[in-house]
Length: 133
Image (tube, rainbow, N blue to C red; front, top):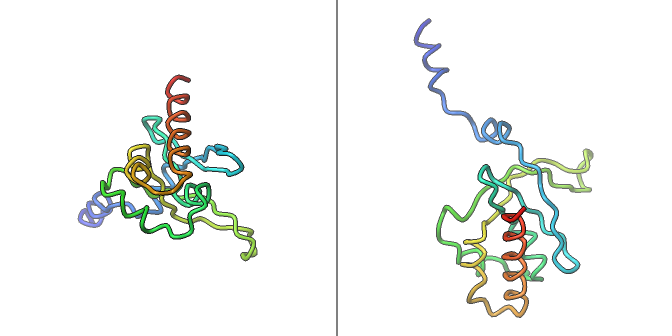
């Protein structure tokens, strides 16, 4: 009887339990005519949703940019509600990738995209404004 109690105490939580314990509310940011979701971590640092970044940059082939983020500390999975009209509930929970400012810099600094410098400058301004507040 004592061994089952010990096993439960040492059991690692599943990813659903870990994310359920840390609900994250998204922050909607506007970049030109695009909406970019961001999430704040425990320290207050912003994490930008990669899908929204690629949409704002009007970039369809995303892997060449995504693979430039080599530091695992610059990528985070966020459990978020994703609206989808194809489901009866009108959406569902999904793990989405987000990156911090360091990951954005790694991804966009040497990019040939014409929109990359403006987006990176905007991200720096948004992050700085959040730190001042």
